[in-house]
Image 1 (cartoon, rainbow, N blue to C red):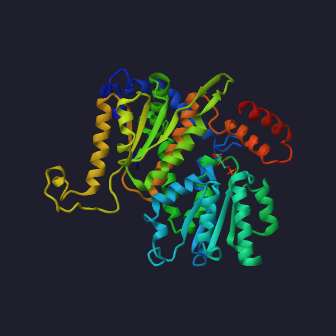
Image 2 (cartoon, rainbow, N blue to C red):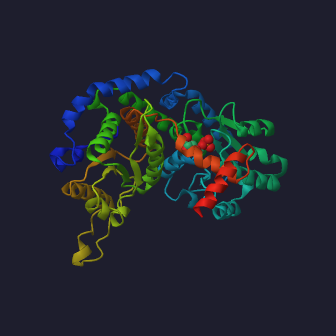
Image 3 (cartoon, protein in one colour):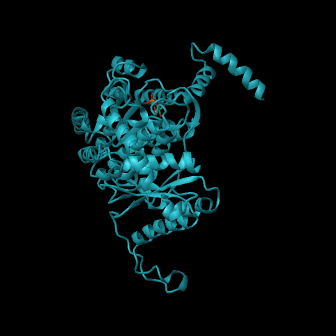
Length: 463
Ligand code: PA5
């Protein structure tokens, strides 16, 4: 199981001003946390609670369907192209980057054991879309378009471009190169898929985009590139079991949720940094940033009070960002809690050869670079503590499906518990609607004429 070390968030290590008296706080919040955990588990099966993500590890049916489809299309495609944005892309990106062999798309077919390359288009930059479509052999590309709502402008505009090119290249057979993941009944993509006869998978009800990585949204691309989806599911289930423990002393998601919450409300640490010391986990930070920001950044609490709460997530990568952000973390405003992710055992052990005897670098020879990266993580954590900066460290025994699934699921539960501590609705995102409406108005969508007029006057006023 993955582990959490919170020692360096404790006042005993970093001092009273910035640290928490964790044993006392755990005891103080013991009952509240026990209630939150029991309540989440009680509500998870009820409609409209948006907690169905807590059941995804047990969805044997989806697992069976994605494996069956992956087996059916095996050997037919050289590339998987995922179209999606936000929660429909970030989980897939995080997990495939973590679990596929590094530089997967550059490996030969033989080195990939005949499995396809995978590309994610999660933005609408015309140059990069066009650039990617120019290099992919569309005939050998399976396009997985993912959108729960079925109408997200970014995803659907990409899809229209890709579908048009596929049809031009393949004629009527283009539809066998498309698989859609969307709501089971509603949305434009569902309509199109049914009309055109695409293979489809379902984003289940009551699973929001940022909590959907373990639904078909993630599992299908994982299975298509040959990842062991059973191993992933076992990781989720074991972590779920561990996190059902209502005792905060034995529940790492509850511990980290409480630490983040108290650091924010009591110690003014309104920034949460995610810093894995593993390049393979770099997109876990992107995924976490969305999860934490969109879930907890709210202006009203559940009782209707104006609150404007939520920590700002920051993505960092160890050791790279030691040469970019750590100066600020050590000496700048003391307004952050930093999450280190530490990998105990890398797949590879890489020895640094003893080829130079110069004083400044000779000591490196004969050591492993594995030792160096973890020494840097430990050294940075201790240096931060010297400066009175709080950190927690999440340790993974290794980067595999079992551990990565545990990590992501643990962060999802942590987010849900933090939302309850803040007393906000973790699962909505009203703050992204206004800009979407303005975009629709700017793009001439029917029904948005009034917004277009308001927008026009506001834009003129700003200019
Ligand atoms: O977490 C969320 O709900 C969002 O980030 C969505 O995933 C994102 O807006 C994409 O939405 P959709 O899947 O409907 O295209």
